[in-house]
Image (tube, rainbow, N blue to C red):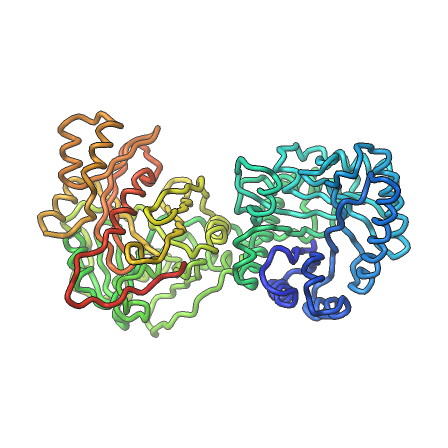
Length: 625
C-alpha cells in the first residue's frame, strides 16, 4: 500500500520537506496549500522535484468553507475552486480535500450541502479531479464521518467521496465500526494521526498535539483495520499538526513518521490475519519483535575510573575484569554489571551513560527488527578475538547492545574481559540486578523515543507524567517488558539554563537491592555522599502515611524515600550526581510497579542545590535542551 505524509507534518521549506519525505522512503505526499503558497518553486517545479524523489502528489489540501452557503457566496467559492483546479493540474494532483464548513454564512441543510458539493464535483471532473469530503471534528454542521457520508451519498457523483481522518473520528469518541458500511470506492483518502488523551478544546488539541500513530492514546490501528475491511487500497497518509515536529529537523521527523507507519501496518496486519479478512497485499510485516529479557550492563564513559570505582566499591561491587583491547573495566555484583570506559571522547566533562546492554533471546533477530524499523546499526571497532556485539542507536544517542551473557549457544561479551576475579559472588553488597535506567531525552525527541522503544524493542509504554522541577517541568514516560525485567524511564526536562539550574540531560542507573537499609548503611560507613533529602520531606511523609515511629526514624536517618501503590511498597535513595550521571538504589516490596515518581520533585530540588565552592572547578558542559 502507498505510504504518504502531509507536508504540514514537517518543519522547513517545501523543498526541504520534499527531500526529507523522499529520503525516508515515502511513496507520496499531501501538499499543504500554505506550503505551496509560500514556496519559491512553481507548481511545475514542485511536481518535477517530487517525481525526482520518487513521490507522487496524492492530495492537495485543504479547501475550506464551501458548502451550504447563499448563492453569492457559492459563486465566489466556485471561482476559488476553479483557480485551485488549475493549480492542481500544474502540480499533477488529482484529489482535493474539502473540509466541512465552519463558516457562519453556512446553513444546516444537508440537501443544500449535497447539491452544492455535487456542483463542485461536476466542475472538478472537467479537470480530472476528485473531491474528498472530510468531516472536521469542529465542523459547524457536519462533524461526524457518517454525516459526511450521508451528504456524499445524497450528492451521488462519481467524483465525490469521503476522506476519513483518524483524529476527527477518534477525538470525538465516535465508533469507527460503521466505516465498514461505506463502499471502498467512495473512500477517496485516509489520513492518520494519533494524539495523547487530553481534556481540551478539540480544535486546539488538533492544531498542537497530534502525533504519529503509536505515540499517543488513540486506537489508530483499529480504525485502519475497519477501513481496510471495506476493500480500500488507497494511500495511508499521515497528517500531523504538532508544535514540536514543526521545529525539529525534517529528516529525522520523516524517518520517525515512516517508523510509525511500518509499526502501524504490522499491528493492523495482526488484526486482519483471520481467514475472513486476509492481510492486504503491501502491508508491512517486519521481523517480529525480540523482547529483551533483562539488562546485561550499563556502560559509563568517564575521564577516570577512580571516583566511580570508589562509589561502586562502597555499593558492594567488585572489579572482575579489564577489556583485553580497550580501556574498559567490568564491575559486577549479583547480575548487575557496570562498565567503566575511560576511552570515550564523551568522557571529558564527567561520567555519561553512553550504552546499555540488553539480554536478547536472539541478538541477530533483534538487529534485523531494528533495521526494519529504520534504526541505524552502529559501526563497532572490533578486535580479532572480540565477541560479536551489535548495537543500534536510540533517539537520544544511547547505544543499545544486544547480548547473550554466559550462554552456551552464543559468544559472551564477558569473554572479552580478563582478570583474576571473574565470579561476582565474592561481592559484599546486597545489589542483585539493574532495576531500571532513566534517560533524559532532547525535548523534541520524546515522542520519537516512546515509539522507538515500543516498536523496536517491544516494550510497553505507560502513562506519561508531568512533574514539577524548581526551574521548569519534567515530563516522564516509562516503558517496560510485561514482567518488569527491563524498565526504561524516558524523561524530558524543560528547565531554564542559569546558575541554579544548569540545563543538564541527567541520566541514572537504578540498582535493585535486597536489603536497602543495609546498602544505605554501607555507604554511610564508607563516607560516601548521598543526595541530601530535606527534613520537610519526612515531616510530610509522616502526615501522609503512618509507618510506625521506628520506621519513620529509620527513613529519616538514612535518607530513604518512600512510595506505595496498590501492589506494594517502594524504598529508594540517590547518590550525588557526577557529570550527567547518578545512581539510585531501590527495593520493591510485594508487586510495586512504579518508580517513586511522587518523590521526583524532591530529588530534582535537591539536585539543583549548587555544589560547595571549590578553588578550581571546570566549567559545566551543557546537555541538549
